Length: 266
Image (tube, rainbow, N blue to C red):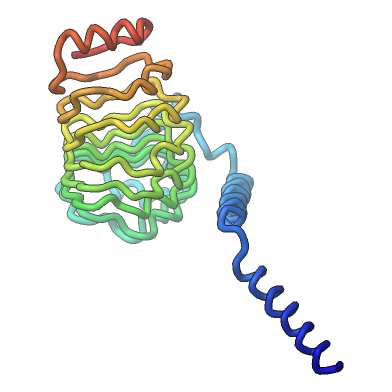
């Protein structure tokens, strides 16, 4: 009798262990998402709000044009513009400028960004147009306050699937690269207002595009896109650029009728 009870107890213990180890995957995902939200909120609460400048007012801030001048007063640097300086790399001490909101690095020879960039907690805009990037600089995924990212005219062939880690991004310009696949995460970027994918290697637009409820301007010109998903017509776009796409004028007129309040460029 005792041995029978022990067998029954053992079975219950085994089932208990299995139920713990094989928990619902969706529950795990929900917990992971909740943890990420908590981390973002905690990070935001740790910021000095007086150092996080309204992006519409950033133009009023002084722009430091070289590292020497910036290093002389690092805590005053809000905007650092190192455009057209033939830079091959960004120094690791970039995080010395801890209050940077805007970083301009376009028209250089950069192919990677240092990991220290993740320490720039106030970074809201970064311009990397016309450099030598062949891979998306993934350190940017850790820049939680980033709102504007310009990466046009590089040689990037893919975007990270978890690009939606940049939850505050409002403008993404990655035209004139070699993108052929839409990353799944891009459709979770609910604050995205401007998306430019002109002159890439795209052949279609996924129906999930309708999930980008804040999108105002979409540029997919000069891709091999011949038709659009009906779901896209539900978006309240201000402008849709289709120039250079292999579409008939009759089809473009059909799009105009389906989106009467949208400026269609073809």
